[in-house]
Amino acid sequence: MFSERTILALHFLGQFHTGDVPFRELAGLGANLGGSLYNNANLLRGIYEQRFRDRQMVTFQAELRQKLFWRIDGAVFGGVGNVSNYIDKFSLSNTKYAGGAGIRFNFIRRDRLNLRLDYAGGTGSKPGILFAIGEAF
Image 1 (spheres, helix red, strand yellow):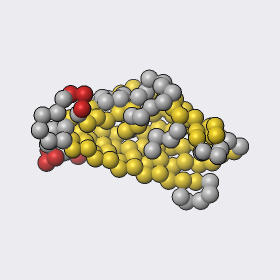
Image 2 (cartoon, rainbow, N blue to C red):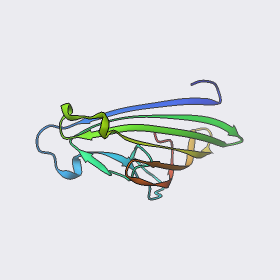
Image 3 (cartoon, rainbow, N blue to C red):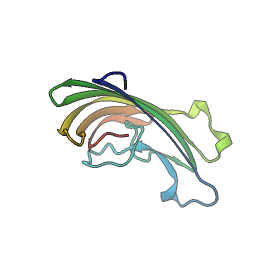
């Protein structure tokens, strides 16, 4: 936290598989840009959900949240990530990126529950709008 009105949130995640992995269980990058009200897939907002899949995955995201006025907050965010079949085959040249900005409405102050509306774009996806309940991370 930078101040009472500004928060820097960081998120790092890795997922690593061995053996035979069913397709639906593969690690994936991308968030649901279809406009769902509740969304658990918030890895690299701006890339379509599960757009990039493989056995190994690493991702890093950052979000700067700023209180604006009344119950309205703003946020800017960005992230990088990659997927690969083998850990030793990760390549910086294949790194995926995503970023955007959004507005938050503090729906329930006591629980710090926000409704969020984000506009984001990224590698291999057209920019889109994401509407969700709660912060991405």
